[in-house]
Amino acid sequence: MLWSLIRIFLFVGAITAAAFGAAFLLETGGEVRLSFGGVEYTFEPLVALIGLVVLLLGCWLLLKLIGLMVAVFRFFNGDETAVSRFFMRNRERRGFDALADGMVALAAGEGKTAVAKAAKAERYLERPELTHLINAQAAEMNGDTKRALKYYKNLLQNDRTRFVGVQGIMKQKLAEGDTDTALKLAEKAFALRPQHDPTLETLFSLQTDKEEWSGARKTIEAKVRASTLPRDVGRRRDAVLSLADAKRLLDAGEITTGKEAALQANKLSADLIPAAVLAAEMQTLDNNKRAAVKIVKKAWTGNPHPDLAAAFAEIEPDETPAARLRRFGPILKLRPDHSESKMLQAELMLTAEDFPGARRAIGALADAEPTARSLTIMAAIARGEGAEENVVRSWLSKALNASRGSQWICSACNKIHLQWSPKCGNCAGFDTMDWKTPPESDDLGAATTMLPFMGTMLSDPNKTESDAEEAEPLEASSVT
Image 1: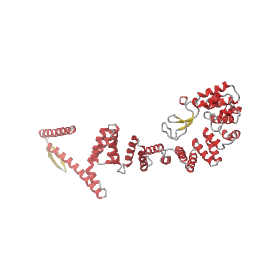
Image 2: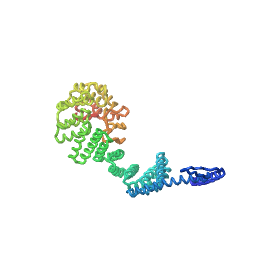
Image 3: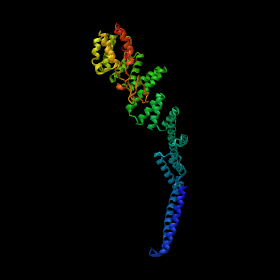
Image 4: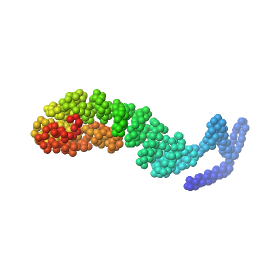
């Protein structure tokens, strides 16, 4: 309304100015001379001005006529929209101006202005593949999800905008918490554009949330092919997914396929401890002990871990303590300076009742890296060597407040987990579990877990070391 009134005032002003200009030229007098082809023409100033305007108008009309002729020529040469584009050029200009203003308003967070400009662009352009997207995003900005959904559904009708429509609806379903529908839409978006990285990330996250490990492996392969994920990282993640799938298959009773998936996970990442443990267990069940030993040794070289020691012990479950100590010799030599190797050797010697040997094996570890497990081992050594009760109590008292040592910790949020899992239960990070020692402030402590062992050792000073072993001390592996 205001703009229309301004335009009326401008028109009246222009007419008034023109009238005053004409009157001024009439009163001024004089003449305008034009020489052309040896002939001289004389005009009054007003007539000359009118002639100039007519000449400019004629030039403009001539250019338009030439443009129309070119459009007709193109039409007869197969360009079916050439003539319509010629007559719609001015509308398109206004439409694209309105579309640009709408995009600027959208970027500036002015939702209402963006809606108005998009509506104007839609009237001029009649190009829904352009205007519907602006309308949908502007409606989302205003909180009108129903209107946004309508426009996103309209985008599905056009091949050029179908992917954008699927993406928009998928985001709305994620915001609503409808992950089942969102997963189907993510799969549809992936089919439309298999190399679109944000779609691959969303699809992978939804698949792992739903524990669809096989589908997630295909998504990882697509990310590697699209060069959005380094090949070594993709191989590691594929191993984690294969391990998770193996556990699912084994839980479902599909032993053969579960074993294949476990061996594949170990092949993809030999240093993935849970995969090595499961693969070794599968080989042991098949009585393929040599393969099981090879798997454990390779994983132990990368990162010694109590679960690997337990898997290695299960290869020969009925051997004597002395035989077990001899069989573990080659593994202990792989990483002799590692704290896990020292504690494992000390535990094996405790089982064989070689208490001086256990003390030599653990060395100064209890002082250099005091943990509940190393201090507990020292208490057991002291008891086995016949030390006074206050010495044993002193070691156990230290163990109560000591760190638990290395644990499964999420590298993304530092959450401590009792068991390894493909995704962090706290931050949903994938493949973020590291076996390391947490900061003291984050350590869960050992007091509660140590109580059964301490109660057994302190309740009856006359109990032997073999009796105390039945109390299952903290972090004690099945090797003992």
